[in-house]
Image 1 (cartoon, one colour):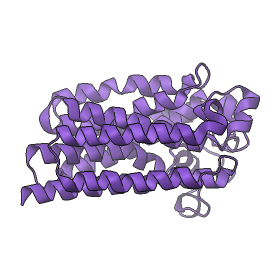
Image 2: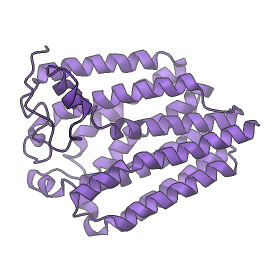
Image 3: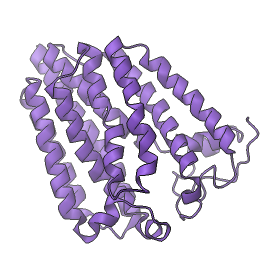
Image 4: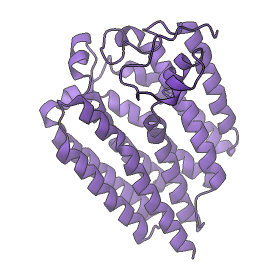
Length: 313
């Protein structure tokens, strides 16, 4: 399984990352499959989990989110994001081989075989399962249900102009998990947070997809970047506005105070900056703005945690 061929880093990966400088060569292709050198992916998967945990703390009258839950969500996000990327690369190997930015990924570049990638996928999934089993029964079944949007997402770019919607269904699932881990059920707060997360995901992944729109057109891959085209900024205004309203409603149902809403409004400034400066024909800038959503996650989380602590005092 571990006989691999290290032909160098992926084209759009972080340069001189520890994956390429410190990991043993035999492990580097697997790290690249899991995108360990690009942590923004698991941050974007993690934020809805942490936001939900923080809103649950507010609703329950706790001074802060459950630290053990935050750790579990972190480990689970890293494992399942890696599993998702590995699965996506297995499914998309033929497409990746035709796109400039992705043809150097481990499978199309010949660094690992499909069998090796599938074995690595199983290992990561088992880690995710071990994390999931630490939660209550309701959350375990809820987590298992998340596998459906994860499984269908890679195929959506072939059949719909809205693959980003299906990414949102998968990546925002943590908005349900953080709440259920505390209360053992769902309510309007996590549902509204989930819907807001979907809108946010469509927005930031549309920006990301503009990097590949020309290659995507050549190989027949669909995306909201191609769908929105020159109207992308208008679409982002609508998507980010919807996300903001839904996040505010979620905070209201959790009986949050001013600090939570201040965090959401501070996040609006960040999202507005993305829209104002966006140049959809500048791939490097699109990647930078996409990554900046990690900062947006911190802004909302800080507001929710501050509100929980203030309410507890």
